[in-house]
Length: 156
Image (cartoon, rainbow, N blue to C red; front, top):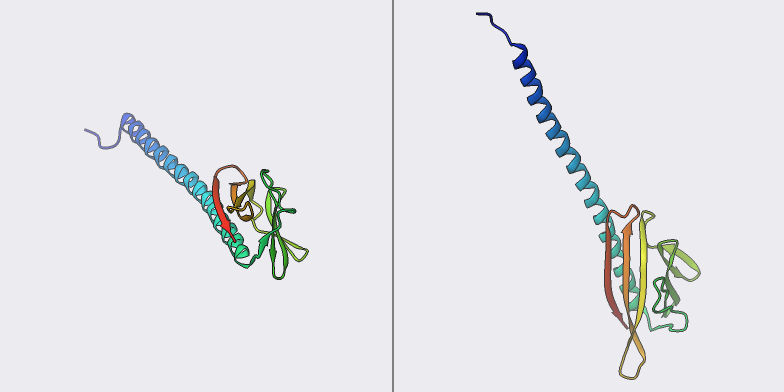
């Protein structure tokens, strides 16, 4: 009896190796895709947190909402607040949320984050005076992998 590996055994070993190799590669690709999606969601959520905190800080400083300059009930709403140091404005320009204070405009969102909705609604008191706003923000990662919509209110 000869020692060694027959052709059939070799083919079986190669087939088993191919199956295991394919499974490992498929697993690695799935993990990579899930990591990419998680990163996109993380960037969207981080942007939402930053934007809402920034607006909240502006509301803390604001004395009133400039209802004549604020654009309500539009998906590209513009928020104008009156502060002791002058007007501050939040607007959407080419999918980026912009902050304008003292004539200087600064983007609040990073380039790969797209603001798809900035809908403002008035919050009125019993005398129909505007005392706050309700904002609906829609933000997505630029390839559409992760989207989030948040509805929040700010009161003076």
